Length: 365
Ligand code: ADP
Image (cartoon, rainbow, N blue to C red):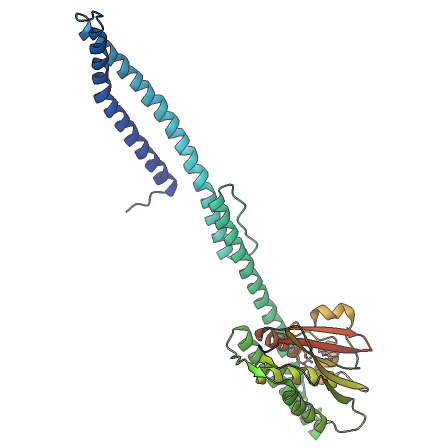
């Protein structure tokens, strides 16, 4: 079946409606008007006006005049209505055609294509919804591109180092010393950590990470974590880890495993970026939020860097942290884990003074 464009169909449907209206109008009027006229004439005769001989003539003249008037009405009225319905169909169809062209441009990869506003409210709303969807898709596409580019950058560096070492070993330019193999192991461990972190982040972002929220008491969760970190400290010069938790701290609604993961990450970072001083873990309640803070006296973060701290792959000093094994994903994971549990995370920091990472979890009801 040949496809008739919507504009033509809309126009034809207007014409059909108009034709039906005209036929009904003309037909009913053709049948009823002469009868009413005869009734009027009879009434006049009843009042004594003599029109007996001329009655046939008068009726014919009336029918003739009515027919002429009708032809002109149909021609002019029909023409005007046809013209208006053509303009109306065009007015409705034009933005739809434009919208279709824009969706095709968008599908072909023109991510900036947006539907212009329309003065027809329903079409305006449709265009607005399309534009919102387009912006969201554009954002996801942008993130995907950034991720692929970041990822290739992150993978390239350790791979280049490993390859360099292996080539030097093969050419015997480097002695097969234990330090060389240790370096190789470190780089492969870094790669492994990167892949594991990414897997974790991807699970959270796609919503595959189960979060089992329950009423949770924080002190029994925090103490063993702190003890584990204290046990790992080799020298007494390491920063002291102090816990300051209010005795009447209410319980929270949270997943114990995920909360532990957040704390381990923050505490691990605090130790990594603090040479001397103290690391304080505190917790307090404010309205229906229970705040937990990990404060250190380490290298701190520059003010200009603070907005980027929770972005994945972000590191204050890429070359230095790469050596220390950081992937720049830990805080991105922390942020998402906190948000998954209904809370928020923030950081206060001053360069060379220390950092204070704080997050809240909802108080148990
Ligand atoms: P990484 O594995 O590199 O530590 P994170 O996402 O945990 O990744 O941290 C991102 C960056 O934020 C780190 O590379 C570091 O530059 C900075 N950072 C995180 N925690 C601290 C801290 N306590 N003190 C100073 N800088 C920090």
